[in-house]
Image 1 (cartoon, rainbow, N blue to C red):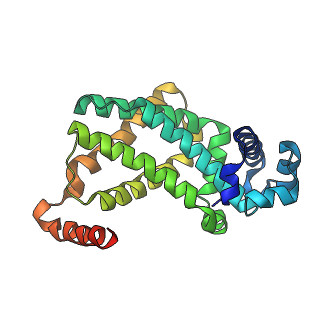
Image 2: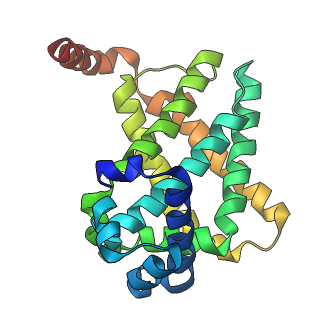
Length: 229
C-alpha cells in the first residue's frame, strides 16, 4: 500500500506517474517492466519514488487500484435505484462497459499479471488500496440492490460483501484470461448478460440459505459491532 506521502502528492504528478506505469506494465508485463524507465519518463528520481512508494510491487498495486477505481466510477455512474428492474438493467450496462474496458490490451495485461500466482505473492503486502476499492464497489452494488428491493439481505452485510467480493474476483480472473477471445460487440454484450446472470442468481437466492438457519451469524456480527462501539 502506498505511503501516506503518496496521497499528499500533487494530483497531476500522481496521475502522470500512474499513467506512465500503466503504459510500462501493459507493454512489458510486471516482471519485465522497468521501474527505471517509469521513473525517467514520469520525471521522478529513485529516492523520490521511494519517498512515495515501497518500490515496483507497490507501484504495480497502485496501478491496479487506479484501474479498479475507474471501474468503481462506472458502477456509480450507471447504477439506478428506481426499481428492481432498473437496478438489474443498469448493472448490466455497467458490466458491459467494464468488460469493454477490459478488452483494452493495457487493462487486460494488467489484470492477467495481477492474477498470476507468483506476481500476486510478490505484490501481496501492497494490496491494501486494491482491497479497499474493490470492497467499495461491491458494497455499492449491494446497497443499491437492497434499496430497490432487487434482493433481500439474508446474510450479515459484512459477510455478504466478502462473499460477493470473492465471486467478483473469481469472475474477473476467469474473464481476464479469456477476453482476448471475444470476437465482436455482440459477444461482449452476451458475456455481460451471462456475467450478470451469475451475480443475480447468487444475490437473489440469498446463497440458497434459510434465514432462520443463519440467525447465529447475525448474532455474531452484532456482538462484533457492539464490541467495537
